[in-house]
Image (cartoon, rainbow, N blue to C red; front, side, top):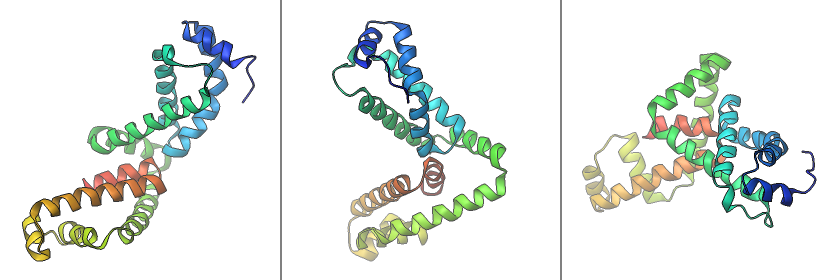
Length: 196
Protein backbone atom coordinates (compact mmCIF):
# COMPACT_ATOMS: atom_id res chain seq x y z
CA UNK A 1 0.00 0.00 0.00
CA UNK A 2 1.54 3.30 -1.13
CA UNK A 3 1.77 6.19 1.26
CA UNK A 4 -0.34 9.21 0.38
CA UNK A 5 1.22 12.66 0.71
CA UNK A 6 -0.94 13.68 3.68
CA UNK A 7 -3.84 11.43 4.50
CA UNK A 8 -5.34 13.98 6.86
CA UNK A 9 -5.37 16.63 4.13
CA UNK A 10 -6.83 14.19 1.57
CA UNK A 11 -9.54 13.16 4.05
CA UNK A 12 -10.40 16.80 4.73
CA UNK A 13 -10.76 17.42 0.99
CA UNK A 14 -12.89 14.29 0.60
CA UNK A 15 -15.04 15.36 3.53
CA UNK A 16 -15.75 18.60 1.67
CA UNK A 17 -16.90 16.66 -1.41
CA UNK A 18 -13.67 16.56 -3.45
CA UNK A 19 -14.07 13.53 -5.74
CA UNK A 20 -10.38 13.44 -6.68
CA UNK A 21 -9.52 13.09 -2.97
CA UNK A 22 -12.01 10.23 -2.71
CA UNK A 23 -10.34 8.58 -5.74
CA UNK A 24 -6.97 8.86 -3.99
CA UNK A 25 -8.40 7.18 -0.87
CA UNK A 26 -10.02 4.50 -3.01
CA UNK A 27 -6.81 3.71 -4.90
CA UNK A 28 -4.76 3.74 -1.73
CA UNK A 29 -6.96 1.32 0.24
CA UNK A 30 -8.70 -0.78 -2.41
CA UNK A 31 -6.19 -3.65 -2.71
CA UNK A 32 -5.67 -4.19 1.02
CA UNK A 33 -9.40 -3.91 1.77
CA UNK A 34 -10.18 -6.40 -0.99
CA UNK A 35 -7.73 -8.92 0.51
CA UNK A 36 -9.25 -8.34 3.96
CA UNK A 37 -12.81 -8.93 2.72
CA UNK A 38 -11.77 -11.91 0.58
CA UNK A 39 -10.51 -13.66 3.73
CA UNK A 40 -14.11 -13.66 5.00
CA UNK A 41 -16.04 -14.57 1.89
CA UNK A 42 -13.63 -16.56 -0.36
CA UNK A 43 -15.55 -15.51 -3.50
CA UNK A 44 -13.62 -12.89 -5.52
CA UNK A 45 -16.67 -11.41 -7.26
CA UNK A 46 -18.55 -11.08 -3.96
CA UNK A 47 -15.48 -9.57 -2.26
CA UNK A 48 -15.20 -6.99 -5.03
CA UNK A 49 -18.89 -6.09 -4.68
CA UNK A 50 -18.53 -5.75 -0.90
CA UNK A 51 -15.45 -3.51 -1.25
CA UNK A 52 -17.33 -1.35 -3.74
CA UNK A 53 -20.24 -1.08 -1.28
CA UNK A 54 -17.85 -0.08 1.52
CA UNK A 55 -16.34 2.74 -0.51
CA UNK A 56 -19.81 3.89 -1.55
CA UNK A 57 -20.74 4.00 2.14
CA UNK A 58 -17.56 5.98 2.92
CA UNK A 59 -18.53 8.56 0.29
CA UNK A 60 -22.09 8.76 1.62
CA UNK A 61 -20.98 9.33 5.23
CA UNK A 62 -17.84 11.35 4.45
CA UNK A 63 -19.08 14.29 6.56
CA UNK A 64 -18.79 12.07 9.68
CA UNK A 65 -15.12 11.21 9.11
CA UNK A 66 -12.68 12.70 11.60
CA UNK A 67 -9.35 13.11 9.73
CA UNK A 68 -7.49 13.27 13.05
CA UNK A 69 -8.52 9.70 13.99
CA UNK A 70 -7.32 6.46 12.36
CA UNK A 71 -9.08 6.23 9.02
CA UNK A 72 -7.75 2.71 8.48
CA UNK A 73 -9.48 1.44 11.61
CA UNK A 74 -12.69 3.24 10.63
CA UNK A 75 -12.62 1.82 7.10
CA UNK A 76 -11.98 -1.74 8.23
CA UNK A 77 -14.72 -1.51 10.85
CA UNK A 78 -17.20 -0.43 8.14
CA UNK A 79 -16.01 -3.34 5.97
CA UNK A 80 -16.33 -5.88 8.79
CA UNK A 81 -19.85 -4.69 9.68
CA UNK A 82 -20.89 -4.79 6.03
CA UNK A 83 -19.57 -8.34 5.59
CA UNK A 84 -21.46 -9.47 8.71
CA UNK A 85 -24.71 -7.85 7.49
CA UNK A 86 -24.24 -9.51 4.10
CA UNK A 87 -23.69 -12.90 5.74
CA UNK A 88 -26.87 -12.45 7.76
CA UNK A 89 -28.81 -11.43 4.65
CA UNK A 90 -27.45 -14.35 2.63
CA UNK A 91 -28.27 -16.70 5.48
CA UNK A 92 -31.93 -15.68 5.52
CA UNK A 93 -32.54 -14.95 1.81
CA UNK A 94 -32.87 -18.20 -0.15
CA UNK A 95 -32.77 -16.46 -3.55
CA UNK A 96 -29.45 -14.74 -2.74
CA UNK A 97 -28.07 -17.98 -1.32
CA UNK A 98 -29.00 -19.86 -4.49
CA UNK A 99 -27.38 -17.15 -6.64
CA UNK A 100 -24.17 -17.45 -4.66
CA UNK A 101 -24.18 -21.25 -4.91
CA UNK A 102 -24.68 -20.98 -8.65
CA UNK A 103 -21.67 -18.62 -8.91
CA UNK A 104 -19.61 -21.15 -6.96
CA UNK A 105 -20.76 -23.97 -9.20
CA UNK A 106 -19.59 -22.03 -12.25
CA UNK A 107 -16.22 -21.29 -10.58
CA UNK A 108 -15.29 -24.72 -9.29
CA UNK A 109 -17.65 -27.44 -10.47
CA UNK A 110 -20.43 -28.63 -8.21
CA UNK A 111 -19.54 -31.94 -6.64
CA UNK A 112 -16.00 -31.41 -5.27
CA UNK A 113 -16.80 -27.97 -3.84
CA UNK A 114 -20.01 -29.09 -2.16
CA UNK A 115 -18.43 -32.25 -0.76
CA UNK A 116 -15.51 -30.34 0.77
CA UNK A 117 -17.83 -27.67 2.16
CA UNK A 118 -20.22 -30.22 3.62
CA UNK A 119 -17.34 -32.08 5.28
CA UNK A 120 -15.89 -28.85 6.73
CA UNK A 121 -19.35 -27.79 7.93
CA UNK A 122 -19.87 -31.15 9.63
CA UNK A 123 -16.52 -30.85 11.44
CA UNK A 124 -17.30 -27.33 12.70
CA UNK A 125 -20.86 -28.31 13.57
CA UNK A 126 -19.61 -31.18 15.77
CA UNK A 127 -17.04 -28.87 17.42
CA UNK A 128 -19.81 -26.37 18.20
CA UNK A 129 -22.00 -29.09 19.73
CA UNK A 130 -19.18 -30.20 22.04
CA UNK A 131 -18.82 -26.62 23.31
CA UNK A 132 -22.52 -26.15 24.07
CA UNK A 133 -23.79 -26.20 27.69
CA UNK A 134 -25.18 -29.69 28.52
CA UNK A 135 -28.85 -28.68 28.89
CA UNK A 136 -28.81 -26.71 25.64
CA UNK A 137 -27.17 -29.63 23.86
CA UNK A 138 -29.86 -32.01 25.19
CA UNK A 139 -32.61 -29.70 23.95
CA UNK A 140 -30.94 -29.25 20.55
CA UNK A 141 -30.42 -32.99 20.05
CA UNK A 142 -33.97 -33.88 21.08
CA UNK A 143 -35.55 -31.20 18.86
CA UNK A 144 -33.29 -31.17 15.80
CA UNK A 145 -31.78 -34.60 15.69
CA UNK A 146 -34.65 -36.67 17.09
CA UNK A 147 -37.45 -34.49 15.71
CA UNK A 148 -39.34 -34.07 18.98
CA UNK A 149 -41.70 -31.13 19.49
CA UNK A 150 -40.97 -28.37 22.01
CA UNK A 151 -43.79 -29.73 24.19
CA UNK A 152 -42.35 -33.26 24.14
CA UNK A 153 -38.87 -31.99 25.03
CA UNK A 154 -40.28 -29.80 27.81
CA UNK A 155 -42.04 -32.84 29.29
CA UNK A 156 -38.98 -35.12 28.96
CA UNK A 157 -36.59 -32.62 30.56
CA UNK A 158 -39.02 -31.19 33.11
CA UNK A 159 -38.67 -27.61 31.86
CA UNK A 160 -41.12 -25.14 30.34
CA UNK A 161 -41.87 -24.91 26.62
CA UNK A 162 -40.45 -21.35 26.68
CA UNK A 163 -37.19 -22.66 28.16
CA UNK A 164 -36.98 -25.20 25.31
CA UNK A 165 -37.59 -22.47 22.76
CA UNK A 166 -34.95 -20.24 24.37
CA UNK A 167 -32.41 -23.10 24.39
CA UNK A 168 -33.10 -23.76 20.71
CA UNK A 169 -32.69 -20.10 19.69
CA UNK A 170 -29.47 -19.76 21.71
CA UNK A 171 -28.21 -23.13 20.47
CA UNK A 172 -28.74 -22.30 16.80
CA UNK A 173 -27.21 -18.86 17.29
CA UNK A 174 -24.20 -20.42 19.03
CA UNK A 175 -23.65 -22.93 16.19
CA UNK A 176 -24.05 -20.24 13.54
CA UNK A 177 -21.62 -17.91 15.36
CA UNK A 178 -19.12 -20.72 15.89
CA UNK A 179 -19.11 -21.71 12.21
CA UNK A 180 -18.97 -18.04 11.21
CA UNK A 181 -15.95 -17.40 13.47
CA UNK A 182 -14.07 -20.56 12.51
CA UNK A 183 -15.18 -21.04 8.92
CA UNK A 184 -15.96 -18.59 6.15
CA UNK A 185 -19.01 -16.89 4.67
CA UNK A 186 -19.89 -19.87 2.50
CA UNK A 187 -19.90 -22.24 5.46
CA UNK A 188 -22.10 -19.80 7.36
CA UNK A 189 -24.53 -19.74 4.43
CA UNK A 190 -24.41 -23.52 4.14
CA UNK A 191 -25.14 -23.74 7.85
CA UNK A 192 -28.09 -21.38 7.52
CA UNK A 193 -29.61 -23.72 4.98
CA UNK A 194 -29.14 -26.65 7.39
CA UNK A 195 -30.48 -25.19 10.66
CA UNK A 196 -33.00 -22.52 9.67
